[in-house]
Image 1 (cartoon, rainbow, N blue to C red):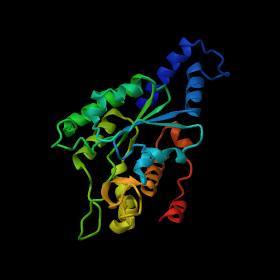
Image 2: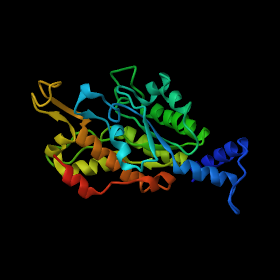
Image 3: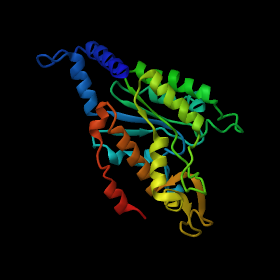
Image 4: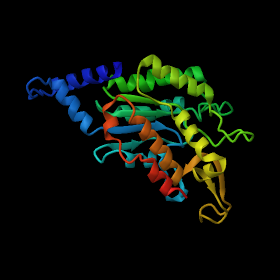
Length: 276
């Protein structure tokens, strides 16, 4: 894949600059550097409130980025930069992507999931047309990661609790952005996670009522910080954030990247046992 060639080239340059020259017979300095980076990668998450890490004041609300670490081996670090209310455009304009690109290293990963806020056409600070969204993914996120020898992984936006009452099957959330993300990942030949498809298939399998335990539905008085209860079809509670993170890790395990070898704990039987 082009992305792996780009990462290897960056690693070779860094190894050469550092004077690395102790590779085993038949192994280049770039191979040695690549192997070292693959052993201890960091996953950086650029996303919105569906992935964000929340404090105790928000219990039981969590984003999938908050629970992702448990599905990777201990040598994989997760740096969650996801923040609510951001689109692919505003995340860049506010310098949040630069904060990642300033520290990301060769062999690290940039997980990119937007679309929810990009589609907010009534909120000018957030709205990003599907065409512009695609170019932000291409030029800023994919391009920025590749320039630093890191590996971008493009995600389609996670599904909302939005379904057809007649069939009980879930609709595709933000279809234009799903298509744009799919297209740009193929055009740039970078790893791709169709989170829209995998999350929708999961929700279809449990149905709309059970999906309330995935999304942020709470009863009045169930949590002191939510005295009136919550009915939120976009954000997740702890169980849902965990299951979405499990889906992501399951998808990553199928990718042709070194990180796939670090996936753990995705056994579906465990998910059934932990269900509310």
